[in-house]
Length: 353
Image (tube, rainbow, N blue to C red; front, side, top):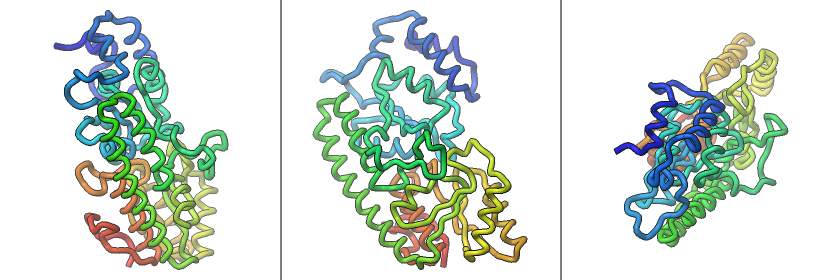
């Protein structure tokens, strides 16, 4: 039987899966949470903040992006059921919430999101729900002194912190604490799972430093579609340039493209990279610009920036996503890395020789 709050949801939200603006969703949620008929079951759904010993079944968690969802799955194991709002190839900078997203968030026990304005168009909705249930930004656990505004607006830190494995690993603690506070019976299981997963992340971080270090120093230049890789470059020793800014909600200017073309030609850079969740138009303009000046530059590979690979694949995990990026960049820029990555699990030949 439907809960009354979901009946209200049906009345307020449009049919279908069309995107709804963050402001509208926030307003609708405010109406839903205070204006609908309130029953005991509805109050339990929205207001319950801890799991009691008598509760059966897994904790229902909503996570916005794949990088957050995967951390929750690793720490939570069988004690959690995760609904991920944004799938492979989805750009979180531009994503607008849907009717199904609102339903999932209201029905969840906990909500985890990345933060730092990555999910800019749904932040209002998340903050509204956060008044009634735990809504946790993973980046709240990250040392604020380690954040950078390089490549973007000085007023807003770069949100792409998962590109530095050691930095993103700090978010595991925020997830562990959130799950433990809600489900105290599972505290030991969460701590143990987190400890095991953190060891995997440290091994991945060490792999990245090792393989990127094999790229000839003059070739350690990473050019991508947008500025999602500054943490990546800082962590692993690469100069990083993006055609667009931190958010993809902007057009690359002609001057910016021309400046990149000048640099590519002057420094004889041979490869640039496209991204799985960003249109290729701007990076192709750079390639064409270099060609018009007699310099050949190729696409060194497709990188995962704001979204992971397909669910159920190795690249559809956080470890697989970064393994793919590190291996692809290394091989395309003249370094040495295993063809199928750190664990031999990458599904196809990576860029480079």
